Length: 291
Image (cartoon, rainbow, N blue to C red; front, side, top):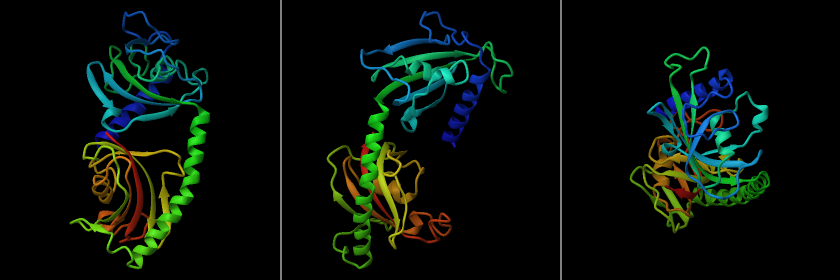
């Protein structure tokens, strides 16, 4: 529920940009202003490259209304966006976007948006309120770099699918019985490669690549085709129970296949139209990061 509230607040703030007047989003006297007049202050600053239009940036954002924190991506997952041409968005541009164009990887800053010139403020907001966006820029990737990475992952998808189907066939034939490990809940798994990094633990934000199948070999979802990691808070019930339990068995760099009974998956209801009721699922998972 907390995450849903955060997303609702973010959407509400985004809608407010249309009503804001240029040159008045400050409320600070540090003298540093974005092109649309938002006040900002660096907390850490490097001399590295800055984003260009079309680059993909990875960053964390913590949003405050006055002195109260509304939400933080540090609590959930890092944010990735493709930087837009701010000359073609509603004026003035969103504070975070304007600020990120001023940043290099490793930089941290706060940009301030004052509401004193807004018209028709949503309920619960006053024209004396200020929104502060604390930003930490993690990474910049050019459009070419992103395209090449996605192309490589899509190519990897086919290889992963064939290997996983073979593992599923051996599992159904009983050829893996000596290799399978089974937890008390009934989760079965094989670790193909032991990771050498940090052990995944409840409360970590974990990033994985995965490919999901019914145990008849029918594929239903994978992250390779999308070309990006799937990130979620481990143990936060944001995924099926078999994932929360299974990923917690891995270290960074590990590759494993999980056979998840229906009561740790989608149960009696399934997930129509792809996953039928009472379906056992097979997932190939690579754990990239746990932090």
